[in-house]
Each structure stands twice: as C-alpha cells, then as structure tokens.
Length: 250
Image 1: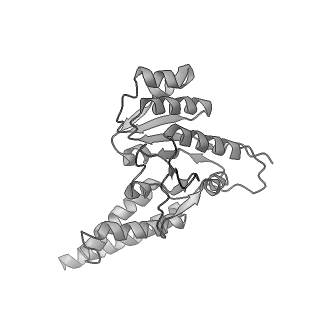
Image 2: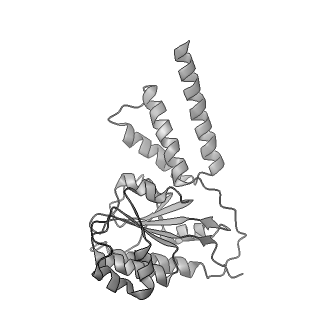
C-alpha cells in the first residue's frame, strides 16, 4: 500500500540561531513542506529583520510572524510526543546512541499517528551540547565528508524535511502500530526524581551525578521505552521515596 502521512503537527526547533538569512530560509522550508510550526530557542539575531523576511518570501513570512520563542529547549519540546535531534559532530563516543536518519524515519512511519513531532537543530557554530542531545528521544547525523562535516543550518533542515517527506510516500507493507513511546518530558521528569533519590541514599555524589545519570538515561532511550514502562519505573521510584521518608519518621 502507499503510506500516507501518519504524523501531524511537526515542530521545527532552532536553537540559538545567529544568522537571520538562515532563519528566513528555514521559514521558507517550513512552507515548502507544510510544517505546522517554527519554534526558536533564545535567538541570537533579529529573526524579524528585513534579511530574514526576504529569504522567507511571502509564503514563509507567516512562519516568522507566528513563530514561538522559548528561553530553553525543555520549554520548547515538552508538549511534544516525540523529539528527534540533528547532530553534526563526528567525534561520537562508543556509548552514544546515534541512529541513521533512514532508520529513525522508518521508525516514525511505522506508527499510525504521532502528534507533535519535534525536530531540533543546534547552533550554527557548535550544534547541541551532550546534555541537550539527551533531551531528545532519538539523535541522528547527516553523513558528509569527514574533511568538512558541518552543514549549513538551512541545508540540514532541507535535507531532513525532504527525506521525511519522501519516506512518507513510499510503498509500505507493514501493519502500522499505535504510538506508545514515552515522551521526552516523561523521561526527563523520571530522571529528575531518580537522581534526587540516588543522591539521597548516597549512591550518587553531586560532582559526578550528572555523568552517571546521563549514562543511565542513554540505556532508557536506546530501549525505546514505552509510556507504560516509564510509568512503572516512576512508580518504583515513588515507592522507594515513600519508604525512605516513612523510615526516617520511625
């Protein structure tokens, strides 16, 4: 059968863009591929400048006019069911959980419907930090020359939207699944509680807790943890905290 689009409300999120020409170009791309919304985290340029508007053209102008601005990535993504992030770095550590864009898009398209799909693109000069990447459910890299691996921001957005759009129109013989993955917010909130609990019992130390929690979080992300599974994990943490609090009173 021909696979129809099974996702809606795509949010393109730019983190601290510093070039109005890039922002305008991305706004135009949002119009080309009928993206639902453009979101920008702490812009470092005038995104409403004449330069940006000229690059956006008339049809992309509405994305500039109605783009939402956030002070942090967390606030920009926490109403989204699935968050994927682009990373241009090639110095990937052995415990990283990068996937090919093709695998991620195939995964996305295996679900009947995904509401509020966020795609994050980092800063032009240094991309996203390791901690910021851990806010995403999935991370991908666009393969380029090792001698010059960094893509222009708007070029990266165009490749991703084109590949996603192309994938959605291919023949697909697999029965579609109901989307049930834990959201970025559910995973984040769970690990805030886990870190507090492990600090409280002395398993973690303040100066090393972030690094250890990050490794644990990578395991959860690799496992494609479902909403039910993350709720079970949170339930265990809540019960342990209840027991510890009541033990102190006795």
